[in-house]
Length: 377
Ligand SMILES: NC(=O)c1ccc[n+]([C@@H]2O[C@H](COP(=O)([O-])OP(=O)(O)OC[C@H]3O[C@@H](n4cnc5c(N)ncnc54)[C@H](O)[C@@H]3O)[C@@H](O)[C@H]2O)c1
Image (cartoon, rainbow, N blue to C red; front, side):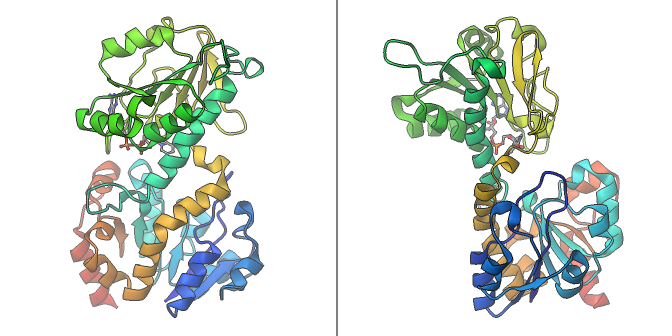
């Protein structure tokens, strides 16, 4: 298989879809790998490091798309990339098509097979290619919150871990999934007082075992959240209901319960936000204030640490890339039910039902669409 990795072109995107370690795995397995010149620079990986593991460096995106059959990326393709996709291509990347009818149409028109990282599932129904970015975002959430609590950043001016003789800050995490657990581990490590709220009792049981006595777990009723808000210095919102907009867990009127210049970090902002007063922000202008409460609502938090994020993402994607390259796309998808769930578009047809429903195009089962491709080929 000819595998290609283009430079990411979306603004503020510094991750890359394959590291030199990934190139080595692929070339050892007999595949050809093409890397666009400079693709790894944002993550500290130069062309030579890829070349040393057997990759061919190509000068631009046109050469890359022309040379490769399996295109591995990080972000959804931008219009100039969609224009280079052909029916012979398989695209493997984050797509988030349900929110983007124009992108869905563009990918349908390309005729390519498009596999979305975010809908691939493991054998327990979890999302293995989304989890690494949630781990990163969870850890950043506490770091960012601790920094914004500093007075010059607009915070209350309280140190998360306190010092001998002065109490630590209190951190409330709402949503104890992958993001929430990782946020809690950093808050515990910084010696804050930590409360993790969730509505799933089984999840609270798991968290209770993971934290021991180092954090309290709480059922996330409206009343229990309201009762805790007056005490806390930092609130991290990390709720998710699969396939739905984030539920609102703190309303504007509840901000009045909080200490002035406490901090809200809304990690769920990429699903619409879980605080009523949240609106998307960027790394270059990450915070704003509402009713004396500082809000941080950056939609692509892992983008702040591309070196870590690139390795975290590629560790998770690599086995799938190898499987697709070694078995061929159709066999790999048929051999792996979880990977099959990642297939969103094939030969002009949408094969993932929630995307079809959200974008108003007909849904075609993936098996049927792949048969069409085999018949046409
Ligand atoms: N901003 C970013 O850069 C960024 C990066 C990664 C993930 N995220 C987002 O972070 C959010 C969390 O992701 P995750 O991987 O941790 O999801 P997850 O599914 O692992 O965890 C979500 C948790 O929220 C809980 N929950 C759902 N509704 C709740 C409610 N009303 N009250 C309390 N708890 C509730 C669930 O029981 C679950 O434990 C998602 O919206 C995800 O898209 C954002």
